[in-house]
Structure formats: structure tokens, C-alpha cells
Image (cartoon, rainbow, N blue to C red; front, side, top):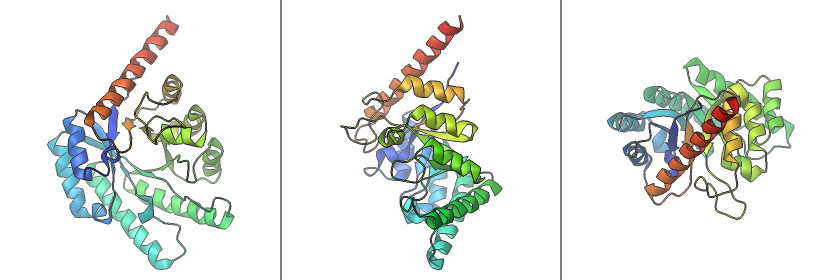
Length: 271
């Protein structure tokens, strides 16, 4: 039986709820696990890490991963002062991750300069540095497939492997749809290095990061691919601009039913 935990991202309640309040709400809704998206400079401080730790313990919730705000982590910058600040902030974020007992960081990477080999080279060097720093303290750095950033296709995953860049991956279902990339192909390419999964639906005529079941994504195929690569991490619901907690509950109910249907089909096929 394939039975991953269902979690939620604090980003789903942005910008109407502060990050720490979103974490509390998620716990009160019965989600056992979350990804925390750190939105502002203040949220990358030890004091805020302490606040998050208190909140997650108060509701008995586990933090699986932290999501980095790309604007604060231009680790490929050629400007020395900017690079130094980004590296210092990255190391502080690892301290927060350890305090929260988070396993992973989700990072978008570069969002421009894809056709400039020198720029891409700096990015790959920065990814190696960041992954090594994270690994040294027991945290996994995960590049996410994003329609407007570096990682969008299975071919780019293979390029990272060919260059021996020691990153793992976050798969995002909505971003795969927006890129017109086969979600299952991305999952299979990420394979055993898949550490985090974001779930949101996609419709080319609709808003971004739709509630689950309201778009065109093939959920049985996505679940089959996740099961095929033996993904055992949580499925993190990452919607956008949620105005009612009922939307989160409905998305959770949808994916739980999809999992039940998938498992039923697998049992019948085995019989």
C-alpha cells in the first residue's frame, strides 16, 4: 500500500497570514507535517527560528523542509558583498533547519541566464557549495522544478548528475504542468534523489497553483510514478492565496481519495 503523509506549505496562506500563524493553523487542521516558506529577512533569524519551533511543538507538528526565498540567496552573484551576505544567510538558515529538525531545503536556483554558460557555471558552483554546507549538518538541499527557473526538464536533471552536483530534488506538480513537461518523466528522472513533493493542480486557462482536482493534471499517473521511485516523503499541498481553510481540507480529501483509488487498483491488478 502506498500511503505517504499529507502535509501543507505555509505558502498556501500567504500573504493573508504570517508564516508562524500559518504553521499553527496547519497543525490545528490536523496536518502532521509542513514545509515552511520563509518570506522576509526577519524570518531568517535565530529569533524567528525559535518562534517557529515553539509553534510547531505547540500543535505537535513536524517541519519536513524550509523553502528559500530566491531573492535572498543569489549565491552565484559576482558581487563580493552580495555573495558574502547570501552565504551568511544560507548558513543561518541551516541553523534554523536544525532547530526545527527539518530534513531539507527547497531552492529554485537561477531564474535567468540559462543560455550563458559562464552564468550557469557560477550557478552550478554555488549549488555545489550550498549542498555541501547543508550536507555537513545533516540537511538536504533540493532544487525544485520551476517553469521560470533553471530546473524544468529531465535533461537538466541529467546535466546536474553528469556534473556531479550533489543536490537532491523537490518535485512540483503545478510547475511541471506550467512548463508543459510530463510530470512522470520528471519524477522518474529525479528517482531516488526526490526528497520533497509539492502538490497543486494546473489548468492553462486558470489561476496558478489551483486546488487539487480543479485542473487537468493526471493524478493517478503522478502517484504511480512516485510509487515507482519509492518516494517515501510527504506530499505537501502548496496552493496559492487560500482564503478559506476549507480549500486546504478539500485538497487533502481529494488526494487521500486518489491514493485510496490508486491502492485499490494496485491490489486488484496484483490479484
